[in-house]
Length: 195
Image (cartoon, rainbow, N blue to C red; front, side, top):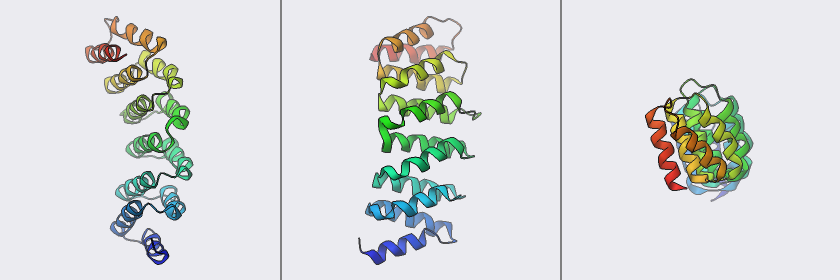
């Protein structure tokens, strides 16, 4: 990309108009120029209030795939006020950082206090997609907890994807517990069938 076009898009990312900022972020993601990472990270951490712009900036960083975005995504996962932004940060961390994100995602699964459980559910799904056995203790602990069934179903699925003795034991416990919601027990049975 020509330097002047990159500079124009970077300037548009600081516009007062949210639609201009969103379009600039999308275009920066399409051109995948690593020189745009710093300004995108600044937009991600600079208190962007418009969620459509935040998502476009985050997706642009995924498209570029630069690890310099990881600290900003961790910050968003841990501290952003919006549960859906935190869930998106978890998803993107899995895409950009992969196994390097296991610890922070496991913490989100255990510590996130969001009432809806969306962050915990997404963190569990991402951990399953990463497939790193280091996530099994946190997933097993979450499965033994008293969470929303959507979270528990994602946890069971993640354990099925990762597998191993501890995963099988945790899933078997849930499957055999008559006090566990039937949807969660079905998810555990399905996950055991995958292992």
